[in-house]
Image (cartoon, rainbow, N blue to C red):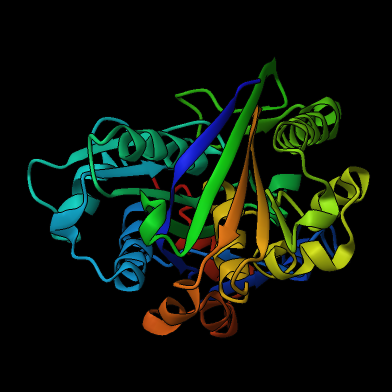
Length: 348
């Protein structure tokens, strides 16, 4: 593990969550004859939505908060495990829609559920080195689970965008970051398969819990901090239970985790999950309060960050819809509609 001190920060952020929701009880009705799943329900992308369209919406919100236009972005990086094309970047489409110059650096990133924070860390490096003034990093997914599989109860859709710039202009400074990775076969999807496979007994330990706790513990040690020094903790959210258990094991209190815990209502948004939690937390954080963010990606790895809110945050919040606005605009669908929207019917 290597600690990286940073002179960068988040100068704009934006969320996007589709309006459609399917209750876990509806999925259980079809496949288990009744009951409920590990979350209340999950967000579902509509027939006209995908990783690209959601990334565009989140990116526009981030630009509004940063008071920038697309032409000022030096990078547009899209982290996802559900890019619409196998061979054609999502980044070029998003860059064009946001009004970026053709000289922008556009690319796609992958690392399971932490593809978004991979793009974030890389963006920090581009800004800190002086190669670009502003870097856009997006985590977006329209994840799917095999019909009837445990993943179907939580595999959801959403996007979150972060614009990285100088710490002097930041809404929240990124004070330090740590990454931790190992070869852990907890979750994978081969290139020619439509649905991912989970490694069952590896999924919690040593996958999620070991990597989250190792990255967070190392970050705390390197910056000389304790859980009580942070106002909020935001973790990757594969379900409602895992982040709460990990927070307790790290020594954080439930009230430190609650504001960014979106999984019970919208499921696991994969590459967007940790960053969406950060969006919801930035919506309420006050000047000087500190946030710890820890993402997780299967295969496996975790990225941990220490952030501090600045005096610019309060002025920027209402330049774009808060995360709560997207959470509130729910439209329920039944399983048949959900299956049609997500292309689960093989009509060929």
